[in-house]
Image (cartoon, rainbow, N blue to C red; front, side, top):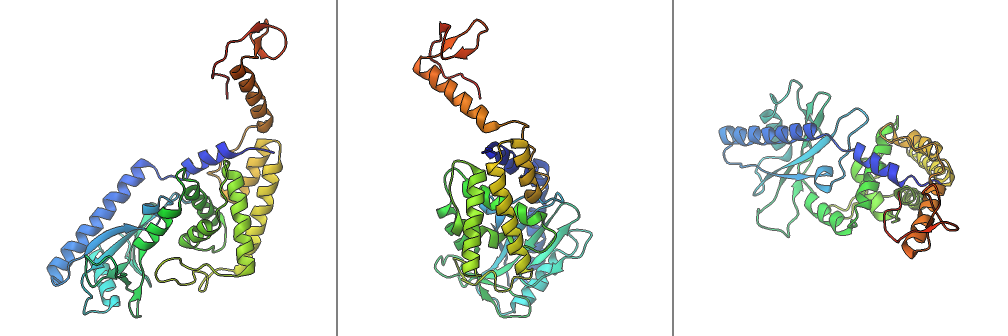
Length: 336
């Protein structure tokens, strides 16, 4: 078996956005907030917008896409319920940020999207609550040309953070799934769908490669039994009901990554195993060493055991062994 856990740690790090991009992203977010505040102050002073971060950035599951971009969700909240429709509020938010970039903002169904060319995009979903201090009431989301819809991103954040493990494996598995989706040439389930699927089907393990394979297998079993992914918090809708991609292509891709994950874990050579992972996870996944890593690790553990128990000896070349030589005093510096 080839242990690729260390490669997954590098992969996870490679999925992070750079500090410079993060700084730009935060500056753009703050600029949009200022533009929206000033617009409503000058044009619709009866409404005062408030803001709350949400989505993958607040969960810690944001990734750098293969095109070196990322996205941020920045909720725009109004209290109490506006007399205007949600669509009108969306139009006003779009008007407020129309000059933020050289491209015209998009008025999408559930948000206003501001695109920063070849860098990132920021989504601005619009909400209302009857009272800012009412923690029991769920926010209502503006939906273009439709009625307001109950939606509670903070409730989802609490749900996820209450389940995630202290070692961060669930967060990493979500990021791996999103990276897998990003490298496919056809439409895959959304980031939030991947997050719910991973959370509901996580298989914890000391190794991320095994955890990912087993989680994928659990997802496959679940979806083959019932093609659903129910939102665990308000509004409790099925995230796969309106999946715009190809269900059969997704299930086929799922079968293929599970098959290659199994082969990668069974493969003795880490380089060959890593190439199987790269096929599905993309170029951010590093190549491994052209060695039997498990064999080397077993040798190290054997050496560690002999050193810690005081049974180790040094031969004439200074190498640790179990047979002839000078007694080697116990210590914890045995390589690795």
